[in-house]
Image (tube, rainbow, N blue to C red; front, side):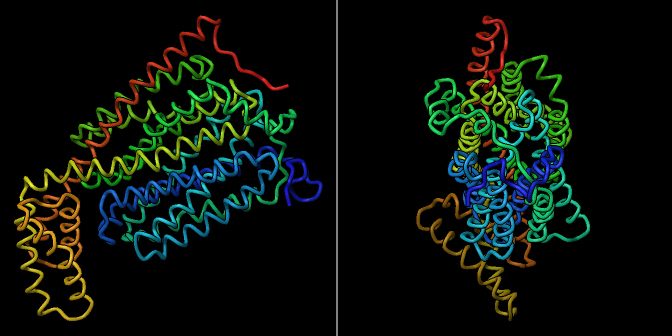
Amino acid sequence: MNETAAEAGSGNAALNPDRLFLGSCVALIATSVAFATVSAIMFSLKGEFVLTNADVGWIAGAAIWGFAVSQVVFAPLCDNLGMRWLLRMAFAGHLAGTILMIFAGGFVTLFLGALVIAMANGLVEAACNPLVAALYPDNKTVKLNRFHVWFPGGIVLGGLAAFGLDGVGLTSWQLKLALILIPTLAYGWLLLGQRFPQTEGRRSGVSMGEMFRATLGTPLMLLLLVCMAMTASLELGPNRWVPAVLEAGGLAGILVLVYINGIMAVLRFWAGPVVHRLSPTGILLASAAISGVGLFWLSGGGTAASTFAAATVFAVGVCYLWPTMLGFVSEQIPKSGALGLGLMGTVGMATVGLATTPWMGEIADRESHDLLVDNGAFVVLLEGAGALESQQLRTPGPEGDDLRAAQEVIVPVLETAMETDTMPPVETANALRALIGSGSTAPSVERAEEILYPAENYGGLVSFRYLVPLSGVLVVVFGLMFVRQRRAGGYRAERLA
């Protein structure tokens, strides 16, 4: 049965804005812990399941674009179904998706589990963005920034927890994924029995037709949707790959991700003075410029000190992009309501999940392959195949099975190389991963690590650089908006009656 917002909750319980806002923040923590833990296990998944960067990119992408699916389906129905109903679905999805990934047996189940988790993430934002706008109609941009503190804040919590598990010897990627269940159970307790307010559109009498016309028939909205695709790619694309790329280079990549998101959380918490001083368009203009500089610097690699310095600039640049884009839409096109906010999130996450993240993985595979060939991958694999074959003869049981499985991956690559005089681009890296994960003690395993990991680091860093031109496009668009608003007398938020 549909729940109107006025009817949601238990009996005649009074509305509790503080608990609703707190519960929304904890729900957002669940989405960001999912983001952090999936990012933290990408390197492990490549080794355990012998996956390519592109394969892992599709899993990581599904953990993003599934968000878009639930946003586009349920955000327009938020007024009618009720925010609590959406959050019930999110709660079930977080539980089911996490369990599915934990017990996954390969690419398909990992992909499906990541997709279900991402759909739950989308349901959280489909419900909580309009909830925050309804609770604080006179201060939307600031409060949405405060709410979205807990996306980077949750990444900090999840990332530190994952790093801490490694530090005490609990390196299981399944255990890291189980961290998602902690905030999930907490927001279920905080929210699912509460009474919710009406959405802003329902309270103002905006019909479904008006909401669709305002969202799809306003030129400014269409432009902002394109910009959202680019701003989301700048923020979430690199953030998704940072742990795996930097870990391949010998750095604790999850700590760099924690550091970036710690800066983002602090700056979003103090967004009020920044919003009032610069205006949303001024923030978007400055953010686009700074994020491009930081990303280009980060893509150059280097020492730990230079990496953290570049990460600082990047974090300052991207921290305000997502919530300010949502606040800008809610203040400039208020009749778009929950649909407008949902569609912005849909476009952002769909772009990152379906295009940006897999594309970055493909770039990394391509760029790293050239380095592998130059550094003697063929010789290492040839020596490794010989070592595995001789070791199989004296290794019975499961250990021998692992050696044989690795051999089955390596031999076809060598045969292709001898027949065509070229190393196959994706299979070569996979063969090196299989050799490393075989359990063999042959010297060729160490040599495989010495050539694979630097190549993966290099390819990943190059993929960051491909996103930098987006910041240049955004500087032009936001710059024109900023100048136009200054000429019109400054930024003004629109209000519904």
